[in-house]
Length: 258
Ligand code: SAH
Image (cartoon, rainbow, N blue to C red; front, side, top):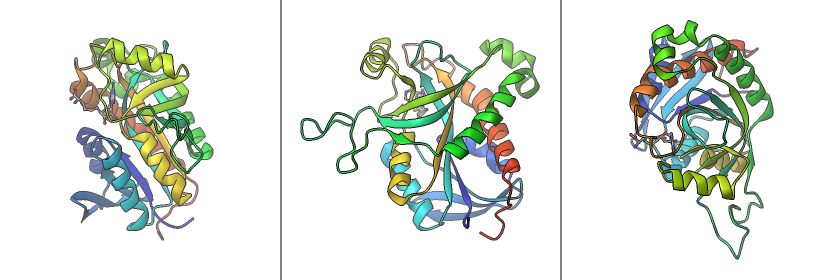
């Protein structure tokens, strides 16, 4: 397959960690965004900050596909845990993605993206399986990655991998009432964030594989703001770099020609 792999991060802290690991990145500015073209673990990549929200993420994805000809898009970031066992420090690898704030009913069923026939967009199985395998390895020894002090501080002693439905919407879910409503309406949703399902929809239109891996930063409740930024900087960015790095390193054919 030709073309670089796109790594999209939702937050600056995460992108910074990835860029620091790229030896040769060149900046290309499009639509007010910095697209960093280079290599990571021998693979041709374009790394970019999506900015927050569905439209910003969809614009970013479209530029990646049209301007950079990427052969796959992987989204890495943080999310709020919804399902009961999805705790801070756990990692979700999406199998399906849905926009929880999309509702064109009664013309179309609730959540369905008009004219696509889909509410749930599938993540690419091969990439998601590979990411999940890497995540499982990383989570086996959080102390090795984060150090004992950080693990103690955030109570990350037995982080778990989850696979399933990830939901996205233009809202930072930060009250117990809101997350309870999402759990009621979408009982199989594992976690909530603000970009993934939008990128999944764009990738579906272009028939390009997409995957999403999200570290749980909060429980999408009234405590969601506490320590959020420190968690992203100290925990999520290191998970991201370790997972994306190991995944790229394990890809069989270096995509240098792309
Ligand atoms: N304004 C917030 C954070 C920015 S939005 C603050 O500073 O406290 C949160 C980002 O993380 C988004 O990119 C989103 O994808 C993800 N995210 C993490 N937890 C979330 C939650 N509970 N609800 C929605 N998005 C969440």
